[in-house]
Image 1 (tube, rainbow, N blue to C red):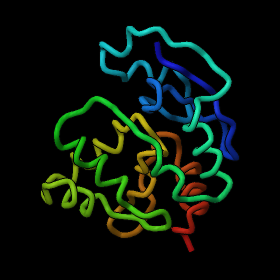
Image 2 (cartoon, one colour):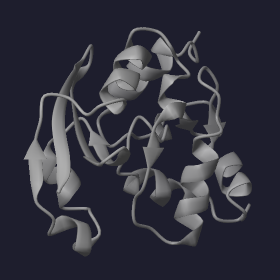
Image 3 (tube, helix red, strand yellow):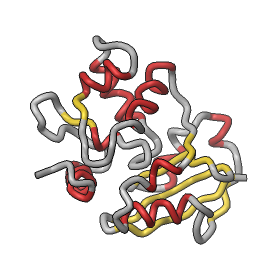
Length: 164
């Protein structure tokens, strides 16, 4: 059985789904929007609503309270191909307060020519903002897209000190 909770943040509710201490989904839309994108085997498992997910909820609170390294302590798992997995691992190495371009992400994920695939990996990320796809911007520095809206991306980047 998975656990689910709604975590209040300064930018709206963050919906969280975990298997024990491994976060499977996080996003600012709804539980359904996360479950719809789960691996089919995970989508069939019963989900129990709880008040908070031990450790994970605390680390997310710490992040929004200003401990920008707190999200690094959360274990994650999501379905995806080899390049996407590499891209998500690379994103977790971007320090809070820094951004990379899609081209830089493609290079760090193992294929400098796979800029579109880097964008797709960002779009398919089920665990935002813990896997920080919000730290990926266009080559010219423009914010680019964000599945939860550019306003949330901009807030997160301001919170982390990445925007001057």
